Length: 126
Ligand SMILES: [Zn+2]
Image (cartoon, rainbow, N blue to C red; front, side, top):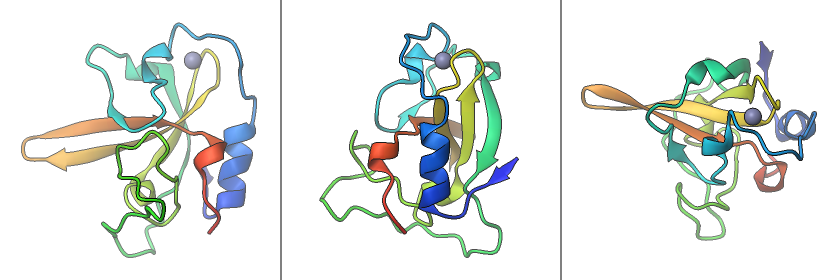
């Protein structure tokens, strides 16, 4: 599994095998911002390829929104080292190899699995 520690590496992954075709498997995940993994979506369709987590870095809840976005904005920056990216793993669709970021938001009694397409346009320099 790849351990990604800077934006250059992350952009490389985002641009790797970037498909242009439609994909029946991950179509439900293509909303540009964060969303909960839709009920009924088969998580087996996503293959773990890397992580942004760094065990040596202290846990942070700080977010990065210099342009006034919020965590749900479709154009929110993808900023390594900030929440929620510091707890994300990187997945790719087993059919079309689109890349996705994913993490589990722990709330009360269950984990809300959240997913966002890895779009190089939103990755900010670190
Ligand atoms: Zn796909």
